[in-house]
Amino acid sequence: MANAYAPYSKFPVGACIVTADGEEITGCNIENASYGLSMCAERVALFKAYSEGKKDIVALAVAANVDEPVSPCGACRQVISELAPKAIVYLTNNDGSKVKKMTVEELLPYGFSL
Image (cartoon, one colour):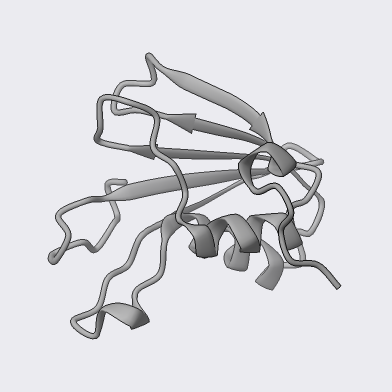
């Protein structure tokens, strides 16, 4: 979250991917004045992992400065479903005191697939 660029929403989000070999790959949201060009933390982390050849993703955590666990947007849910279908997903709040653990299928039932 600390590296997020969120001057418009004022809602920094952080994500961390864990690969099968235990490597952690992080991401944060990056906004743009043309809001459709913004990128969520979850997709930044996933795209970063894939661009580095890290495709065996076993876990994904998402955090934001909110009281309840933060939830990915629909676009992120679809990308998670395609790029990390077997991952365990952890959604958490500002201090990590509340965590929701779920499968990708629970996060996005009936996601698009080939």
